[in-house]
Length: 98
Image 1 (tube, rainbow, N blue to C red):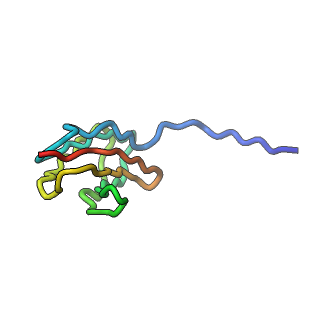
Image 2: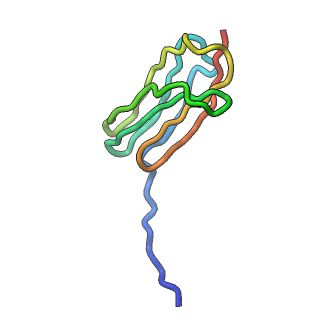
Image 3: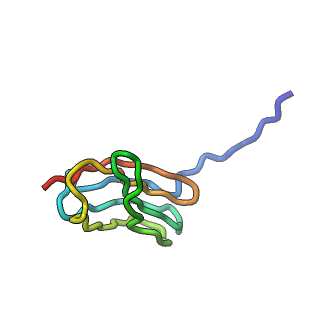
C-alpha cells in the first residue's frame, strides 16, 4: 500500500513584493516581506543570466523591508533581480532607462 504523509502548508519565509520604479534610472527599491528572521541575498543579473553583483547579503528581521539600490553604474537595459533565502528563490525583471 501507499504510506500517506501529512505535510503542513506553510507560508513562504520570503515574499518578493515588487521593484520600483520600473523602469528606473538612478535608484531602484526592492520591496519584500519576511514572516520570520532569515538570511537573504539580493543579486543582479544581466539578460544573459550572468551575475553582475550581490547587492545585499544579510540577516533580516521579520517584517516588511525596502532595499534601495543606487543603480547608476548599470547601463540602460533589462536586468534580473534575484531574491533568495536558504529555502526559496524568486526572480523579477526590471528596466534601467536614462
